Image (tube, rainbow, N blue to C red; front, side, top):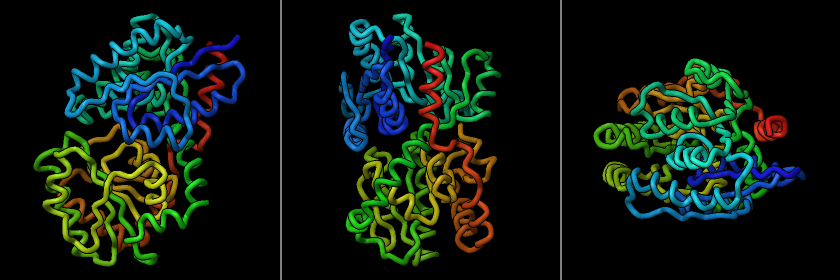
Amino acid sequence: MTRKVMLIFGTRPEAIKMAPIVIQLQKEKNFEPIVCLTAQHRQMLDQVINFFNLPVHYDLNIMKPNQSLYHVTARVLEGLEDVLFKEKPDVVLVQGDTTSTFAGALAAFYQKIPVGHVEAGLRSHNKFSPYPEEMNRRLTGHIADFHFAPTRKAAQNLFNEGIKEHVYITGNTVIDALLFTVNKVQNNNEYYRRQFYFLPKENPVILVTGHRRESFGEPFRQFCLALKDLATKYPEFHIVYPVHLNPNVQKPVKEILSGLPNVHLIEPVDYPSLVWLLNRSYMVITDSGGIQEEAPSLGKPVLVTREVTERMEGIEAETAKLVGTNRERIVSEASRLIEDKEEYQRMARAVNPYGDGTASLRIIEILKKVL
């Protein structure tokens, strides 16, 4: 009997982490994958769909300029009602912690369709950081029927909340996607060298990303000032910062960092370009959840510019270090990695706790048993 598996997602990180599952499901004769996009993010999502050559069966196309969380939630729920009623999937898969994730799980619940939560169980234990992601993830966890936890700690978080049935430790599908993409970009190295022509071949690179809404305002200014300090202190290092399109990010970044010869403020890049930059970098300074998982697989130390993280496994494994948005702390920890080679190697060689690149295969084997 063929089982319908509907995968609902709408942002670039979700698409990256769902892509390996879609690709593996397409190889299975007893599964029919149905991809439904909310398009919570449009352009960045489309890049990933095209790169992984994913089929798209439904596209809700909900993205509007400056839409609120209320609008995103309502439009996803309304858009999914008819889609779920028409397809009647055997299971709905959602991923991570976005508003599309929570609303997708809730829509499936309203029609009594089982929900599988990919990357279940991550917790910061602070409902306003990351915001609104922490509550999206918690609420989805209590709706879901099957919980695909990336690590033992994530599974334990679920147990602690009373979620003790159908919890499976699978690893994180982001590592599956990363390893697939690294092979692709390495085979096309000259293309990316031309794309990032402004990077001298021999100079070390610090890759930076920063966009979390809980840091907007003065904390984000301090983060930018720290980058300026590092650029001035270490002129041989080139800082590459793909700047998020949010005006709360664009304004302070351009005011503080424009005009520095070794700081490259670029447009957001597609996923394979980001992976190439990750592979090219000396270290990473980021508030991204996905990069905290990806960079250690490539041996890149990560400084996490957040006060708390739901990805404590990397902190405990010492592949990553929490530095917050304090200007002096960021500069101090980055300087240590630049000047102390033993400390750098210790972090670079630490074992990545997030998986071995076979999480999607494990999830599909579990679906075969539970459906």
